[in-house]
Image (cartoon, rainbow, N blue to C red):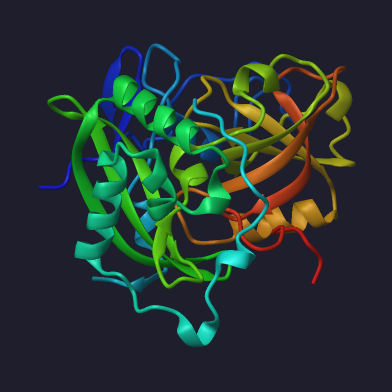
Length: 318
């Protein structure tokens, strides 16, 4: 029997709650029907999933309901990554047949059980990591922090970033599942399907503690995106800026991202949010404004409509 979607916090695990009730966010929100000091309902729904009631601490969540739509087949580790995977993709005429449940589970199971650094590239897309030993260390950290693999649930095929992928949720814990991660596989030029390690590990660069330090830096982050109405400091002009909530399984607070209205970044984010899905993951490049809150960022580029990179940024003009 497949486990219920779970959230994991330092204080324990909780079943998915989609009531939309949650703690209010302090700040200035400009939306007529939203009282000051409260986020909009959509953000609360997502935030209530990512955080447990009580302790607002770090964790992970992957809700199977998000991955259940648009199927082609119904049946904090921080590692630099390369930009895109176009060189690894097979020609359209040589695209392998879908893997199917058995083969997808075999690849993921062997990848997580592998102890030989020389075999890392056999299971993980070379573009999604730069150091074989760091991959091994990260997998060990995940095991030590989240427990052993208890179950794998195949989600079938999906289409994202203009390519076909296979997806599988891995549940971790000791006796009961307390966290989960998504393994996304796609075919490469040699005909083999491999896992995107950056997506599986939710890689950000630099580390979150540096991103949230308030220092002026540019960062690459993987987050869930939702529309929001929170404007102040460098981003006080709501006629100039468009606000989005940025929710990370590895950060214990809601973050806020801003794009200029009518910009290519806004258009790309709105395309992502128009999809009929419960959650909207994205990979973003953000910049810190030193005069703003450490939780506020300017979104300089929408790199991907998912947590793995495509062969061009999602906000690139056609």
